[in-house]
Image (cartoon, rainbow over all chains, first blue to last red; front, side, top):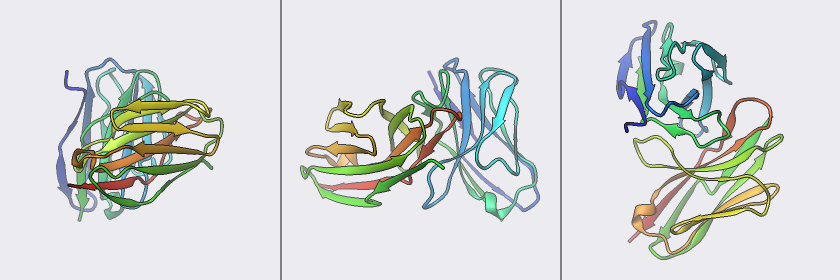
Length: 113
Length: 110
C-alpha cells in the first residue's frame, strides 16, 4: 500500500517554463488537494477535488491548473513558472474531505530560476 | 478570516523533560482541530483529531487537548525520536479547507 505518491521529488525550472507535478493515491479516497509550504507560512491550499471530474480553487490558485479524470490521479500544472512559485508542494488525500485525517505525499521541491 | 497560531516557534528539550505546545485558533464553525507531525523532507503525518472542547486524545508520549480557543499538545518524557515539527490545523464548517499553523519545531536532546 503506497499511500500518496508524488513525482518528481525535486525539479529546477527556468522562468516561463511549464510543468506538471504528479500525484497518485491508492486508497480510493474521494478528496484530494494540493498545498504549498513556504518558510514561515503554514501550508496553503492551492486547489482541491471532491471527486473525479470535480475541482475547485483554494486560497492561492493563481498560476496553477488541476484536473481529476480518475479517482487515483490529481496532477498540478504550472502554466508559466515564476520565481514566486519556488516552494515545496504537497499532495494530500482523505476519504471525503479536509475535515478528516489527510494523508500526505512526501512533496516535490521546486525551484524556479 | 480563519487563523491558527502556534507557539513557540521552536522548542529544545532534554530527553525526559516534559512540556506543551500551544495552538490558538479562530476558525468559524470548527469542524475539527488536527495535529500532524512532520519530519524533515517528508510530508505531514496525521496524529489526532479533536472535535469538541474538553476532548482529549493520547498516543504514546503525546496527549492533545482542546478548549474553545486553544489546543495543547503535551509531550511527556520525550525521547530524541520525538524530534520533528508539529503542525496544528483547524477545519472550518463551511468552506472545504483547513487552516494550518506554521508549526513548532521540537528538538529533544539525549
